[in-house]
Amino acid sequence: AQKITQTQPGMFVQEKEAVTLDCTYDTSDQSYGLFWYKQPSSGEMIFLIYQGSYDEQNATEGRYSLNFQKARKSANLVISASQLGDSAMYFCAMREVHSGAGSYQLTFGKGTKLSVIP
Amino acid sequence: DTAVSQTPKYLVTQMGNDKSIKCEQNLGHDTMYWYKQDSKKFLKIMFSYNNKELIINETVPNRFSPKSPDKAHLNLHINSLELGDSAVYFCASSQVVGLAGVLKRSYNEQFFGPGTRLTVL
Image 1 (cartoon, rainbow over the protein chains, first blue to last red):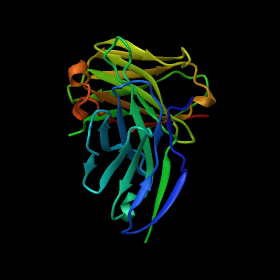
Image 2 (image 1 turned 135 degrees about the vertical axis):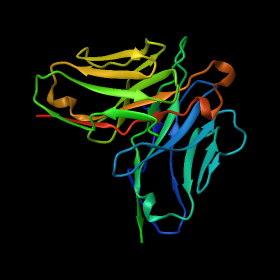
Image 3 (image 1 turned 60 degrees about the vertical axis):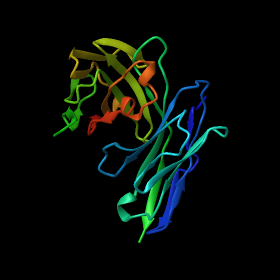
């Protein structure tokens, strides 16, 4: 079963407008972390924002904010004042605790391709 | 300063060959990972190493073998390359702590290398 679901394969947004990228997740863990990464056409993976499952406030990093609704198991990324440079693939990911060990793998969604229109 | 580096950035080879991709991190992290990104951009964990021990080994063919000479390096060896191995391979690292620190972002963020685009002809 897919643990991270991004239902929007592609999105368009007008420059300077805000956009919300959807992400829902599935886990039985009480402690988990949610991440958003950006992958521009150049290919590198750029960390944007992190939300811990016990964080009471929504995470914010500059123009990025995470709309965390724990009961709905959703962690949507909101980008305010979109810029042309925001055009990229955006991946939602969840950190799961690997039992009995010290590694925390990331499970990724299939991504959303965001295109910012001038 | 480069945090996580991979070499080579591009790798083109013939089917049946054996190749290696190198990864180094200078962040002092104790856990390193290999991810595969397929042609549809889907990223999936392949391996992770913590203190030279293999922690996760997803259902990847045994033609793939990670090798970690020390905490700062995790190389990926691929034997008998197949067409389906064509993908972008990302190395990543993170600092993993015990449960007390597991909720903190700084102990969870994975830093990714620039990726290696492997093309098997």
